[in-house]
Length: 238
Image (cartoon, one colour):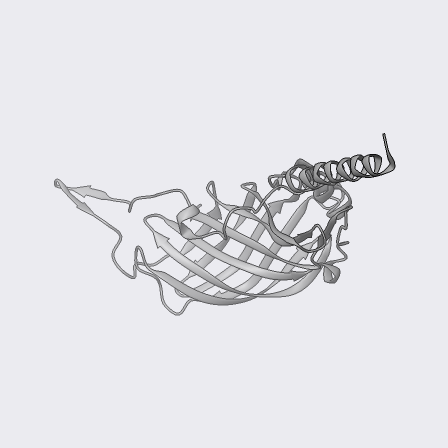
């Protein structure tokens, strides 16, 4: 075999090896683009609660009070969204991890909402990549030491009590706790009333260094140093 033939074979082998590495990085290490941002359509479907009187059915009256205690229940989701740059920045992937292990609640009196709290089980957050999930629960978030991420707010004021099926936007000043570090967090919550449930949609931009979270840089990947915490909460009287 002459020198040119050996060189061609060597180049060919290198190309195959690089292609294999790229395949692993894209399909094993990082997965593909995650699901789109959460919307109210991601909540379980409900129908308005009805009461039967003499054969007639009644739905909750528009503007009916929400007074009382509310608990976060099944159908809730929370997680993260962050960009990953791959193969020299040629390919950008939006990594998304989510969990349904969310708890908490709040109380309502008229248009005042108090004692707002949402707790997220960090270790249960998963994406489309087991490699990413292992690093996230381990060295990134240290979920064994800090098992819960939390958002709290002392109070918020509704512009009005929403009617059944209506969505309102409420600015909330609270605190976000990630990996044991608590920082102020401002979020515009979209609140939708649907039957006996209240659905709450929102997201909080996060700079990882503010929470002492190390930005991982696996071989072949470059993870952005900012991301988003997003959530869809489903609450019912409790």
